Image (cartoon, rainbow over all chains, first blue to last red; front, side, top):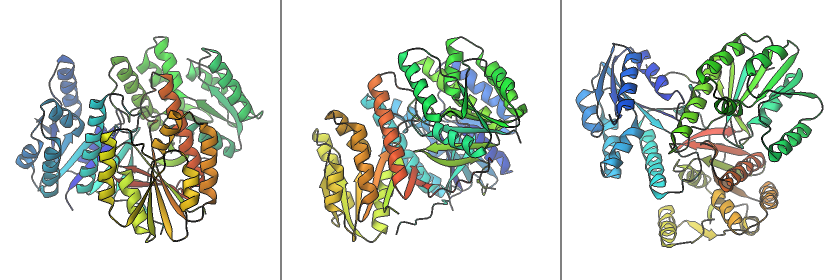
Length: 178
Length: 178
Length: 178
């Protein structure tokens, strides 16, 4: 029982809104951990809009790279942290040439040992055609591996499509093969 | 209880065939509302083939843009309308520079108030890599928002993969977080 | 009851690892049928690594094109064959200009009549944006049709995301429309 949840979904699938609902329903003190880089005015405006939509009862923290430290600093028994999202975090790591496997291992370890609740939001990006360029393939692969690792350490994994949840973990799958 | 259903799926996922089966199983009078534009000979031929495959017990109507009016005109207690598909409709709206949020709001309202059954078929296009061009990103975002809105107003949402259905709504998801 | 299973998933979804687990859990003699072409050193190295990871209790066979014959030759009541994967096989067929519908029909027939267990691994590639080039669209369509046909003939179809299984067949879907 790690206290960590993973909300997976495609672009504009309603995954963030669903994760926010999970956080609100917990009744705990809510912390929003934004990983989006402030790269241009468009991003700035979107961040401001999101902030307004969530409301004043959320504490917002920004961390583009050192997610594990940020989580360890903020985690507490009476709070729930919403990390939105792991795809932007991965993108930041690639941009700053960090060691991806090491960073993913570190987040995996942190998520498993965290005192308090955390919800990770992440993108599913591997269900389209194979990208033509090597960089895109490599990012898609890293995202897939990250999602698998986080799904392993989280108690709860939800897949969201059109705003609606499908529970992946705990699994309802029954092996009837053997 | 709106009497509206949404069948979501990727390209060549078998979503249309599944939606046609739902319509046939209803035992109601079947109306096929095609949104595909007749842009070239290839499209014409595909439309003719689809028409033949469905059989003579379907009434076929074409409407590329004003979906809400067409639905209101045709809806009746003894019939079921299959709208195939919302992705082509959205594409037509973009091509004709219609106001997307207003059009989506209008369809949402129509679907919620319709007298009679309707099945909407729509594509899931947000589970691949982030598209490089802004126009593709914008279309993907509009499709995602449209799917979320329609999922909200429909009583029943089915995700189809490899011709097989996964029920998204009514949801079997149980919130065990809190 | 065909004894055939299909494991579907996106890139880096953990589908192969899940299929290997299914094979190990069966307690049967394990045969790995690799469809990957040996096109360059990178591929050679990946094949060698996969071989090592699976362990010595797997028999490994390579077949890039004539999958049906290979399956018929190797199938036996005491063994389970893991075909990894149908997407690379389809890619090989396209490269060698084989007749895709005929090849898919042949595999469908073989899977339905096979004496012994087989697990097919295949990619979901139709949930991203519509590809701009006709060749990519055509491959995506062929993959979609192949997945639908194989899902029809298999007793069991599992969708894998982030390493976690969702059972598509036998279906838990209940038609509550009519």
